[in-house]
Length: 577
Image (cartoon, rainbow, N blue to C red; front, top):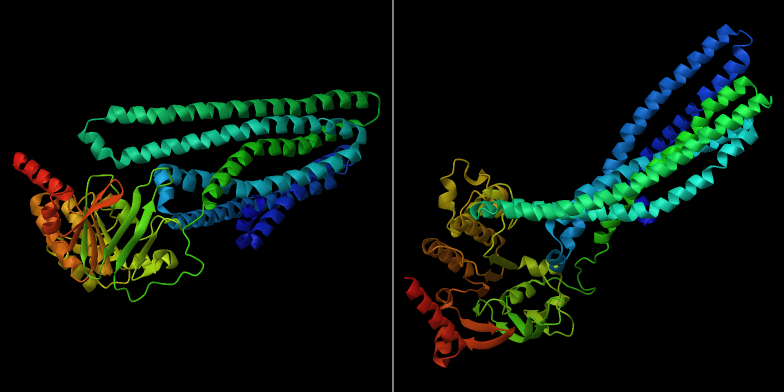
């Protein structure tokens, strides 16, 4: 883990070296005060060297001014190194998240992921700056102060130094407990973030159902978990600091007793004794700094561990010999495909399907039958195991094709439309980022949304709010269709694209979809069977299998599952009417 952490210092080697040099000089300058104090008490003052006293004071003042500049450099540029490292880690993590498969997001909540990108990496940033600086300054100060104290009186110094092993033992003992406690606190913070993200995203539903108390109850569960975890972590930290502070206090007691006895017996002079009392803080302070550094170390290490946990998750990758999908005709074929989402129960069982170029296949059947899974497997959102059949596009197994080339040739319109914060034009242009304004408007016209957009004061520059909250369901759906028009794919997947719309809006959407389907191989998932009567072929999917196939007329003549579903749906519609 240390090697992976050090890698992030490499782009800032020069600045880091200067930062460490400045820290080293700060440590060396810190030694001047006790040295000058010793000379004052033992030489300058007894010998009445008044001019030398003034000069010595001015030299110390000058060195302290230099230390002022050095401390500014360390504080500013040291933190700057940490921030840049944090930004690089966040960039790497975000880029890695873009490459992770759908299955990762099935198992990880957005709030927990955001916690790792923000809170955890902030602690890593603090460690990146203060860690090397504290270690260098403290180590140098301990060594220099020990050597200097030995020049005053080696035995008194060794008596003080004898307390260090006790301090190290106490620190290591409580360090293990602190690590576990702080890790639990991080997890509880992620739980709170996940609860808040979920609650805020669904605030309109909460208000509609007047369930604010329920959301508070859910939040309080995570909040209590955080308090408990924080309590355990602070308990471990309090024991750590109280115990180590007690050991450092023992230093002062030993100095008081041993130094007093040495002075009484004439082993050291009053000036040396006074200097020793002043100088011993140069030894105790860096030791205390290292002790206090343990909390920051635990925070930073825990944050970096949670960072590399995600970085170590295998991303989506192309096969070693993968080739791009080019000159796409759009012929799709499922050959004996079986699939499960990592559970023992298969969602698809020996599915065989084929859609010829430019044809439309509709999938119907009860929820949970496997229709959406079929839609997710075609763009290779979930990897099909080697022994689970094959999915082919133009006769080529998608496992042998690059992921980007497959997905660039597939357009997807879903029931749950996702729009990004930004303008209408930016959301349409997401289909093809290099599209011109005229091409964006033409796509909107073909999706029956241009007329609405032109009535807005800011037109295509209109901000739509988070996830398109300022637009109606039909408007959002037409924006997503315009996005696909702009992408212009050879293959089209419509996953219940009109199921949540009113009849008037559905007519507009259906017109846009009919225009979109022209000349494209299309796979349609629909619950409203009236919308897919004109499909070239209909497949009934139940319990992971293709139960029936044929045109609408053929399936009605079979008097099977499709006819039962069709009849039942229209009977329900009549009752509702």
